[in-house]
Image 1: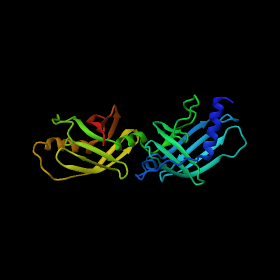
Image 2: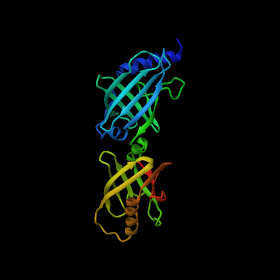
Image 3: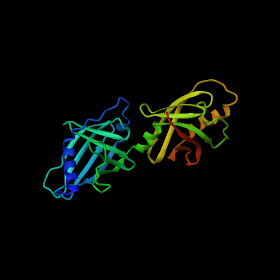
Image 4: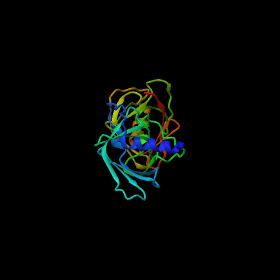
Length: 261
């Protein structure tokens, strides 16, 4: 029996029984809220050209998984259940109503099926167990996770020059909380909060900003420019551990550096 056949047999047992039970954390389930869409792929099959797999994840956190055997006179197998986050922010658990469990990992353009040890299947073909996103109403999953996993410290404002110690906790910064779609931060003198919404094509809207009322003569120029920048932001870019907020013409307004929480 060849190595690939053994792997396929293992996949069959795993795909239809899934005796795994990853730890589910108590945090807000951002996966359910940010992942809705349609994902498709063709998985290997031992005695047919392939298994056409369609995964539909709905906005309410439920899913429907359809498996159709190509060139076989077999009715498609339909599984329904709920989507849950695991203890890894980039890994999901599909928990079906018939107690099957499927682990998938979030990728930039879709989802990758994992084995029971949360490892990729090693079949020699990169896309054997990949579900590519076909339709979605959600922004990038990875962007949402990356934004919320770090504090973002201001390094540059387009309107004024900044003068402070970048290593200081008192430099302006912002944090994104996916559980309540809130932002929190420090603007140079006052703390503030607000709401944010990510959209398709790297769009962002920050609104309802409320700040404390302290007056700091030496930092008011920076603070006012910082808060105006947040209100004017319409696009964002994440690259090289930096967050860039841009206006409606996609011109940079401010640059932030990633910091550990």
